[in-house]
Length: 193
Picture (tube, rainbow, N blue to C red):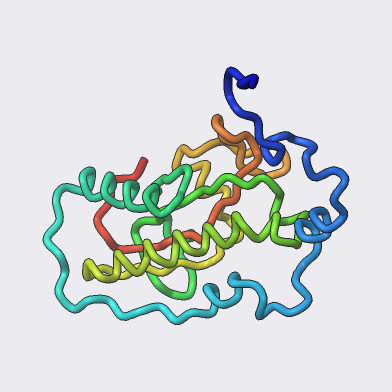
């Protein structure tokens, strides 16, 4: 009996392992026929919870920032940055001093892949920002996670990467294969990157 020496190879790790499967391409690139089959709209439309009435005593802003980043990474964020907001960065008449930016890896571009391939990074980003903003509210501070048309610009300001000529975020680790999740605006005392 012969034994294979070395790392075991699995076909699903190979780059072209799905090239002959028409269902794979359909699943990755086709949007769901019914939006109720997508968790994205459920999370986006979920109401924000209340801010806990008593503020938690915190350490220094630097330590608090490391705790926020650690929680975001625990929830699945690949890159996390904190930026101080300018008055023009705030919207809806609310004034928040800081924003937390979370970035997740994206195998498929959510803009060009309407199926599950593009939904996975969006779903992961929504989950991370929903739970992280709820955690901040439980600490007694305001936090609101929402889509932002300038999220990639804020991510670049937070030092997570640079913007290319098309306005896409380019990171050292993933290049342009990233999705910038909803921006969390908060009054939690943080240290910007």
